[in-house]
Length: 386
Image (cartoon, rainbow, N blue to C red; front, side, top):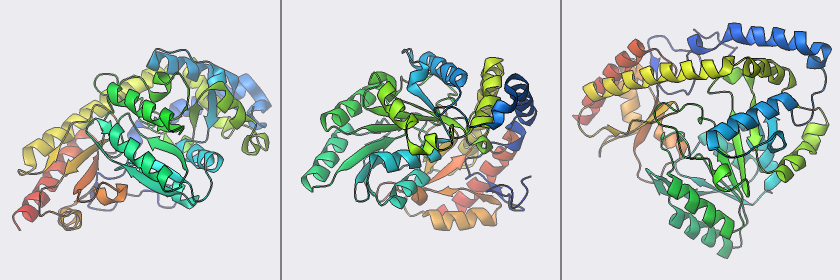
């Protein structure tokens, strides 16, 4: 399915891997993107190969500000948007801009593992924020920030994924979002909001973003085309107050070469302007809903008692808790013997004592997901009975 040496993940023969957060190749719009590139070349000629405007093409920034306004019911303009090379790229850049080696980043537990890896590569310490099914516990966050301040450590920013969280799929409630913002503001700590899965709402829409609830003060939001379009584009956008955007636009990273992904940004602009992207995202949500429901139904049918999960309202993932006495290493060995695999929960640095695994429903069609659930259920029964 995937050619070795071309992509990160290659299917292992005989294994249905429901761990990686990939889109199924059949869902990647090759033909539409080819048309987008052709349309950009026709509209802009050689300019598609020049140094792009620092903050990205103005028409795309304007269109994304309008999308953001629809999401949040709040006013945004192009002055609030910077085109990025994807969430990871801008997270790396923000870490170098907002923090210095020895500083602290406060991140919820569990959290996006590669994001925390970026922080550590910059010499930062990751302080964990406890939470529950409603998101980060604001009281625990306040205690953690107080503790770091008393110890003489500077908290550079708080990093959270409040909407369709990776890996748990949870959505932080509106009340929690407001309280989280209150705590961050009281401590003078900015919040970086990872919004990568916002487009993938499979049930009711999520609450307004932290950026909107904060009226754009003290929050920097990162959004991505990787989940709703294609990860190989390496394209996303940052939303923030106009002063923050102006500061980033003037950074040497952008002034030395312009927009971080100029050619692809112009191709995607054509898909946005034509209305194609809206139709595609609506189709993608319907397809992912079918896939989520297939995996959920299979798990409910085949899992033995004690293996628990909540049905996510969006995103790509199901976080499955393991019963007492069942460890992820033993379960994974049993699962792979039966031709299925998953992402170990420990990779996402959950709270101590947590036993859980992450299951992804975006990579495989419904019939394969049902088979994966049956195989996983057999493995769970085997380890649960010893």
